Image 1 (tube, rainbow, N blue to C red):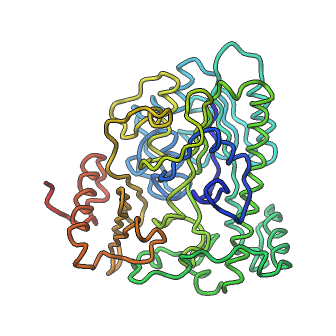
Image 2 (image 1 turned 90 degrees about the horizontal axis):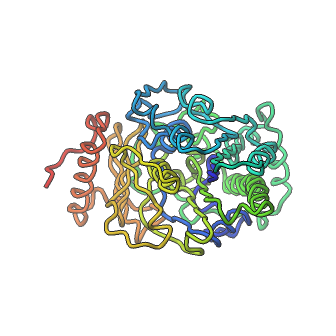
Length: 434
């Protein structure tokens, strides 16, 4: 089994998702030969808590982590059921390469991995390939965790001519983009405008001293700079796609692609100029919805796009364990995607997925997205994702949608009870559960 993770790649940042501004042949091949889940949402739209969820199958907020830079409290029952520990216990050779960015208790060598290779960039494919093609009489499980397209975080520094040391590639891309005509840069997204009735928390939680000061960029970037930002983001994504392609080609070259489950995802997205925002940490689609591709030749039906609501952080661990024929704790909230991927009948599925962070909660149902924040006068948003996929109209104050709003407030109360989300009780809007 092979799990590939990129950093800061939203779900539409692939040519197989219809994005005409870049080419991602490796990712496209996984979609062509496997399944693409079009509604995969992270548990938290920043690195550390999202990655903790992937490794544990648990909402990171229950471990005290709602943002980067927060110390985790990992109880024994969670440590005993880490993804690496479970797979290794089933007799697999295990390898972790690349970016970790989790709490110390979950660092690879302490969490069930036999080997840990630190490089997150050009050297990672070679190390991963060396592990994959060894002669062995046991199955393998490898994680290839790439840092890019995360370097888009340094685009603002390049704009200010203050690129951090070691980030010269972004400075180089920025200088390249300056030489291009406007026609050679990606167009602005359709939802470039700031929405009416946007919740106050979007600006309240924008830090001027952040590496990517999204609030500042919202004010000072003109349309040309936003198009440059998008061009750099595309090029960084193409770079990591090339690295992924090296690993996939090695699987084929070693006759391993027919018997290896490949899962590809990202830890969170990037706003990509939508709503005049950059970076992550928002509940908008570009921040919370990520790629999730699965390929297993002969078992997963190829060429399908599936719209089931998926929680990537909660569902990846049960899915990998299902394919490895490992029992997982019944207390986990995630679901295995194996039956869906293999085209089998699924009797019932979840009504919603939830994303959390230190600013509030997002609940995505089949048609609507509901958000509630802990601060601000305008604390709620409700969007009809069927008719307003760009999230331009907040319906939370519309009398026409009062019943829908009430229902989603109740869904969130259900989730709070189900997931023991004690933090959300302090700011979630109360309702009468039916």
